[in-house]
Length: 611
Image 1 (cartoon, rainbow, N blue to C red):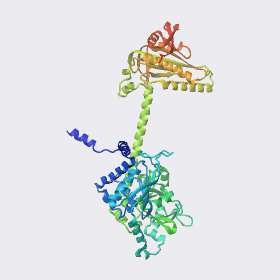
Image 2 (tube, one colour; image 1 turned 90 degrees about the horizontal axis):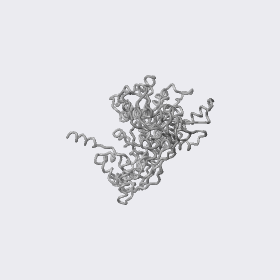
Image 3 (cartoon, rainbow, N blue to C red; image 1 turned 30 degrees about the horizontal axis):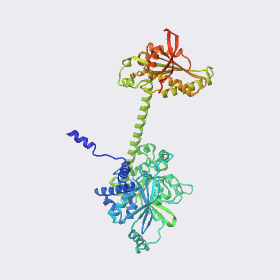
Image 4 (cartoon, helix red, strand yellow; image 1 turned 180 degrees about the vertical axis):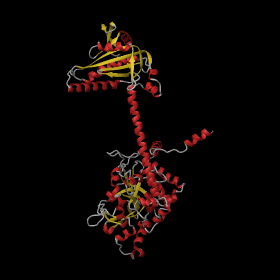
């Protein structure tokens, strides 16, 4: 009973692949005749109804009064949900145009095939939560393929970003009217111009960035955090009028390059930047690994233990909003540092009075509250270490497979497994009643000189021929025993029993001759000899163990090769009788003087049976 319960629990939670949704849509489309787009939109609508049962509809309603408010806040919602669902690969979206008749939305994702699914989600959210009927059309799209889930691959091996521009047609008059009212409201008219320095006083860690991505202004605390000792001869901090990407690493939003255009596009999204201290500047090169879509995988501070050992201060993580200032054509980053407790404050070289007087920064440090971003920051570091460990395990597995392949090239797999199990090498010895042994010796008439160049050329020729023979070896039909000098030895019938060992060995011998002729190497030929009989096989040696064959059968097969002729296969009478019954053509050579055996009747194996 308990076993059944455990089994049911095991299969209760299941993560389905991304490809399941497009596959279901394609299957339903094939059965019903309706379009694939119809079902993907339907699935998107169903998902909104599904998550509404868990209260996520309240989160969406809380983002703003109007549908456009929600569209501008989607990336922030994904940012908050990233900690709850750490493996979520959320898309990114931003409004590029807004008018009374709707808006233009740009959707970015690393997954392809979900642009129609996203349409269904937008239509259901607008209808169910905002009471709007939305007509959605795709203006243009890049790298998006219907029915797939993995986007196209870049030349560097990463995934290309899917970019889709949608036109959303709906009644947007209320939102536009409120937007106009905000601008002409009396309270707004009374406000006079404000100097940029005032904003930097309110946000002492803020920076001003111009269109060329140069830092044209920085708050007092930002300059101090950078280092008062890093100044020019005129007393100006070196952080000013330098490129922002030289000193800051973009952590949020993820998946985009840190460019001027992206700052303007994502101005409604919270930004997180990491200030790279001059003492830690070398870490930026270390961490320059990139994700497929351009963001740093290691966009986190270097571990505290390593910095402390170097006497360097921790990098500072800053969170805030990018605000565009029309008058100076620049963006100001209104931010504050993310700090958990007093220890972290000290490690960053900061003090409580450095933090903003407004907000809860000082209270959070004193109370030791855990910032969401800081928790996520820590999580990402652990996730990165986990990925590194997984990569190491994959490498170890790959090396093990390579080691196994090397071992199995020297020792048959069944024998190797017995040795791994701890058996004595002598116990692996085995007697085979009948096997067929094949010897082939290469002859290269063009390389008989002792010159080094000729020797190197001879080695290259041997390698070419033996590699070609290796391609012909198919276990369990034949097994390559060894190569010694110019001799190539195989056996059929061992270590795996094979009742068809005679014909398999004969076919292999004929293939060797055909391969040599096919290679057309000048002056290169092969002499081949075969014999069938009993052998003893086993492992010899401890340091470099080899699988060897012993017995008179091996000697006779070797004599058949040595007494043979170039590009011919010499076989014994017993083999000839067997092969003739199977349709092979064998011609008698007559009596041949064989060392240690006297005269033996041998035959030439001409060709195999007709197919």
